Length: 277
Image (spheres, rainbow, N blue to C red):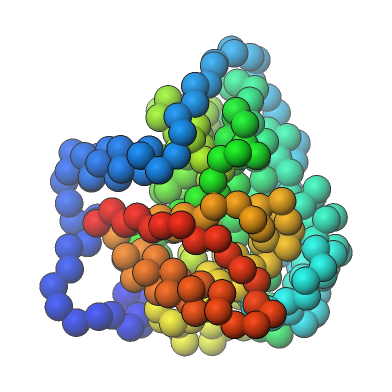
């Protein structure tokens, strides 16, 4: 996807990928410190285990027509592009172990697709890591990488602030000491369609895109994801991101506030936002 196809705001802007690596790390440390002020800190333990084989995370990309909208049906059993009830999809999304995972995870993790436009066959990929301790009393935090075109799973979760990262052998994983899911339930979404594992069955979706489409898709994703994980509907919610996500984060927050005022819309308990350049 070419950057030139995107609708940019006017004025100078520093791209994350042009900053020195030490500066990037410093900015992430600052953002991490600010974020920790919003949630309670918890500790995790490391229990060495033998390598765990990857035997789940089998995500189907088969398109099954089914109508669904941002205001989607209130029932958590509503259907999606990938078919089946939301309860079934949640159980199917549960990860037993990540590829190359060397230690048993003390937290529950999920990954899969959420429909954002069933008619176009467009779905966004997510990775969700619950907090290892007392997740029911910790907030829900959405993370989006920028670019546009940077993977929130490959970069955000695996390189920056997720629970795991990749060893230098490029085969095995290790736990990150300062992973954000130690203090929150972390939800990473690949946006827009065409980034990471997110996709569309309509070719024009890869060309006719921009900030508004991405924001609308992010909102639809969130509403439909909350149907799949209904226990998080009333949870305090934060939106975070870096680089070009500085467009998505405030625009999504504005859309949530606007839709929260509409009768019959899903109420999202937005508590705050955070953006790293």
